[in-house]
Length: 525
Image: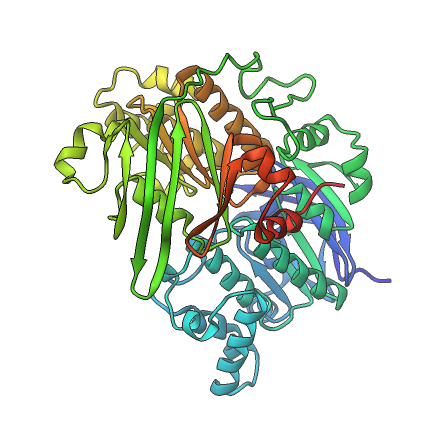
């Protein structure tokens, strides 16, 4: 069978900097090929070369889609292919959609450009697509702008746009990164159906469990080269290259609390300290408590009668599907939203229901780490300026960078020139600058590849053990929350449906919804 996609000796560079070299692979119709590797390994550049969208210089002895030579194709030829024959699911769902247009119009664009459907037919098709990717209330969501949707809903809207015309090749760059477990399972079902119907798929993912479910062939990339490739099941069960083994070892699923995830390949420097974790300063002191919190937005009850307690040196995980109220709860805890009823106490004193002037002196005692680290920084400021602002002094910046495993030399650089893992470390450094007692971590590792995620999780563990920090840890990744949390809350439709000691909730869940969440999570073979 002639491959639908054929790549030979692909090389790419930005200016004088090579980013990809010697990459070759084929993809047949109805086959999924996955590419994994750490940030900067060349995964996205390799995939984007098939769209002619690398932004750099690309050469190849062969770069073919069907009968089209991508390397020599004109702009007009590539425009005809994009959307109609080649679909693209962008990783950056938070910024991939036009912020000024309703998502329905965004999805309808490819239908308008590449089909003869009438306006009414396009509108009907948009609603079908939104329902297909699991977006509830399609008519309402089609009329909303991206800023009115959660990150998970935006990701699903991007997927709907990419598959609108049932392309023969689908390039999926981290398609399930922002999605909770149950929605992720539905999207993987959809991608499986597209693959089984004959679509070829290039899957880029840091989630090896997702890769194991969807891809028949796996390519492992590092510093622009393919270090290992072959059938997915063989590579995941019997990896030959040290780097592949380190990626698999970094997966948190099934790893005990406070066990290190970072495994350094032979001959390479350790990315974080590898000494045993210090003894945790656990106490029974309550540092944060919520009592009967509720918050309504119009007719939507986003948080409904939620109560919990967090002790010093402990981690409380919060899981639930998109729209379950996790982030609204975090904003209530940070006093960025005012509850309609209920209260929050911080270190034994009222935190909500008091004027901001009464909170100001205690603000440094609680910090936050967000999912999109880069967007949380002032783009005009260097790393040093960001941390100086957090410290109220330039003194201590080098020590703060060192505490999160970064070189003091990075102080003079802007965050946009750092890798994703470095950006998240700067965000953590900023959060701990005021020596808080509590950190609210809202999806702090969901956008990171597995090896960098492992480094950041190990760092958070070390900081907790050495400083006695307490974490409110919000994530859709059940493997991460099980590894990081002492106790867990499971939320649905704004309410806590189950809570308890993490291992008890995961091994003997009492509620059907919790059982469904756990069952739908993809697993490594």
